[in-house]
Length: 409
Image (tube, rainbow, N blue to C red; front, side, top):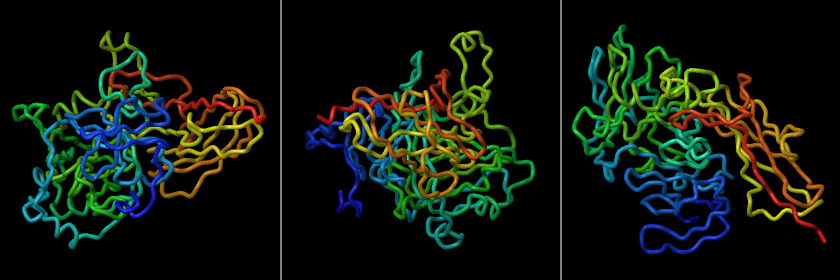
């Protein structure tokens, strides 16, 4: 791993060799935090948790979140359709800007590199269904643990710089983005292609990048090579990989992936009930239109940690939000009866993971329930009661971690 990535990476405490069938016998320390599934090996990636082969879906194991920037080789992978590129000829590839524009254009990769000012942003890419396995009643879809997310320094060019060159007409209402991944269904059906749209009036467009680098390296193929759309603070449903077409629309996008899929309740808590859904009373909005809710996670200790009464440790974790970064993280070491404010690590930007830590000395042996909750820059606090919606989206309930403290003698 050191030779591959240039630096040693945190790794689960027990691992075995690949079993010769494209999977490894990696033993994870905490199957509560992550999905309880086998690992798989794919090109450019370390062993990741394999939730699906077709389409390919891989979850990042917990130990990799000890780094605020998630290593490229450990970054999660999420596709919706099973025909994905495994090679792209950059001499032939073009990024097309078309539709309701004054000058339909096609940009080569070299033009994107040479003709526009580069810009970087550190931002969390999180699947809308991250932590879906926590929902009860259970909902269909990929049963993610907490590892359907990652944080990276994305480098590219401003989306608006390309659109300005093409000349958006004033009556454009939305921008549709599509990449090279596809399916086996008929053209025009959800199983043929994946695309997402953003309202042209959405202020997030000013922060969007067309990224060609991830943590200072070219994008891995499974994370969108040669370029992908970066929408800081929003769920990854609109972070289109292998971006190749941008279309200016004069009408709202009525495609399946906007009208039917990835929609969340139109209320502050993004929560509803099965009864409300069955009655047809649920009003929804596209998940790509709203900021990600505030979240925090424990990274250490995990359930494999050996804690001893009266022996000090440091509790560590990460937090993030799509609304103004992280203002505060609080930790409870008594199941939520009392809370202490954790120290925040360096700030990599409002869209990034924010590390936090708190010293703690266990005072008695036995089982202890730790809890953490974050407050973001706009004053939003994590939910204390479980949420539910039929898509299994936008989970942000206060995180808990049970640890066991042993006797010192």
